[in-house]
Image 1 (tube, rainbow, N blue to C red):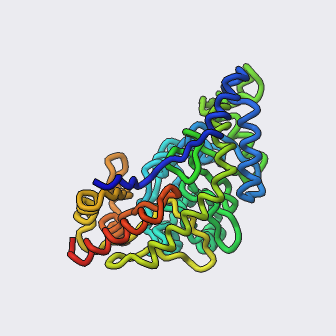
Image 2 (cartoon, rainbow, N blue to C red):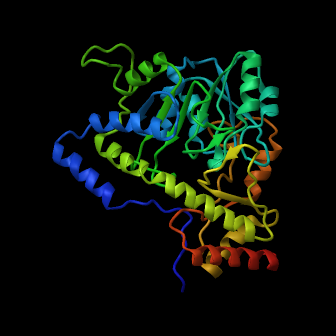
Length: 362
């Protein structure tokens, strides 16, 4: 049997291990100088031009970002349904209501026209997701926001280094959240990084993540313990030195797949967009689940189905809304391996397997 090709693979090397050992020897394990350095280096590396605040997860980053932006009970924030539940969860955790809007079929990201149609008197913000590493239509979404006086928040969990018309994701809205979970384009083991547009948002983020304190025992707000450790930050600092090369390899792998796959619809890239291919997501119009099962059984190639149950149909939300493009994507989308660990032989086996199964009607 040929070796299994996994749909995702974290890359941890000797440099990351050495960085962790350095922190362990220092005795400073909680939030400290490594976190501060990581925040500065992250912003500089991705050209964000704004301060960043590190937290213990991407979900925490969204939650604290929304709280710091003044989102509260009674507000509505427009979100996509075709994404991981953390996006809607973070809105609900503030007491506000996530309002689900449909996606553009090409990018799988929030449709500006659908957002426009979903605005009500209670709407205060829009939270697009730069899904799979492709930037959302920020030109259209920012125009809708400006028309209605709304804030824009970016879920860039999967989009480190993506950009639109030369502007990096995470620098459009009030804040942008990047996840550092192990399977993301770079990791800190676990964690999140939030880019912020103002000094006030930055200050509130730092208060909320640290029990509401800037100085010990001088609590200013009711806060949380969502700090990043220096151990995790040390891993992230090393990963920053590698993510550029990894992204280039992802893009090269995606180009090979797009040039050679048959019988499936390759992911398009919008004009002016830089796609960083957290996932390489194709559409399989007929029997997506059957193709995925056969791809593993017959070719030992893994794949992922993100997200088969849209958020608006999940038990906590149960929203009565028509989202035809979301429902179609949930039926058709399949993510193939694109990570930088793939060899040329791996890529050729993925292509051969998908093409053979597509021809056979699997």
